[in-house]
Amino acid sequence: MDRLELKGSWNELKGKAKQAHGDLTDDDLEYQEGKEDELFGRLQTKLGKTRDEVIDWLRGLGKK
Image (cartoon, rainbow, N blue to C red; front, side, top):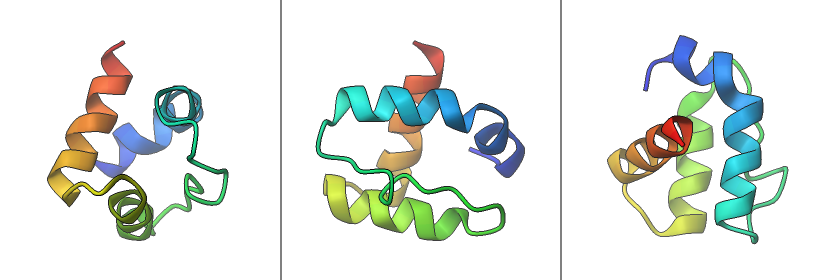
């Protein structure tokens, strides 16, 4: 998932992520340009997934 792809659809993905995992908070899903790795790290910790699994999960949400 490249930065442009993430930035362009983040608000939509954030809503879908919250629906899929009700325990995710706004802080968990805070996106700051240039700090994508921090976002992925927070999601890895919260979801118990690897970085690649988190990215694949977000891509899947984007296709729904």
